Length: 219
Image 1 (tube, one colour):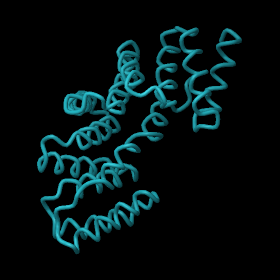
Image 2 (tube, one colour):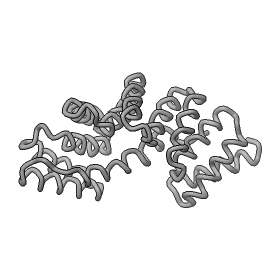
Image 3 (cartoon, helix red, strand yellow):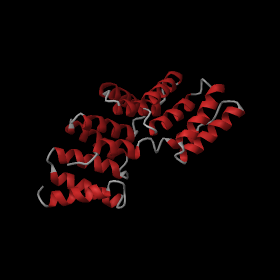
Image 4 (cartoon, helix red, strand yellow):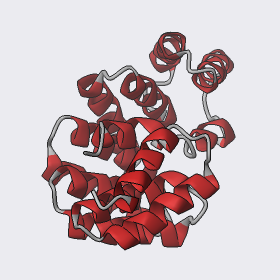
């Protein structure tokens, strides 16, 4: 049994890398709004999501056409499991910037969480269309197919994610889990071992060791 796999895949690494983009964005808003947005970014880095939302609310009052503010608030809402509200913010960010790959990615993850699989796939595919090296978006696509129990297609997406970024342990865990479902235990074992090599004390390390033992014992 793969304990809590889908939830763990979704909650562990999504949107971590793209936080950097929020911090590097050149702000084109007034000083008051800029200060609020900078405070919101700092709150996000500290996982203070309620404070971040409060600061983004202030910023959006004066910068209602600034896409990263809606994206940032959507990020905070996503991490509070407020998926419907996050969807609204990611949608707004995309309306303001049609090429906002991270917003399509965030929207795709929210739609996955609400079991709207077709729309999740569409938005994640748009993210990789805009940014072909967007490893996390391929990972997100894999998670959608995994949740649909389409393990063969999930493996294909995890393969691409690993090709783009071979240092992310969660990609190996996800692919190993999909291969385990496909009863490709030797291949799954390799992926689980790679996870432990990259992240011996990671969030999934205990589960990975359990799976390795199960495979070794022929279970």
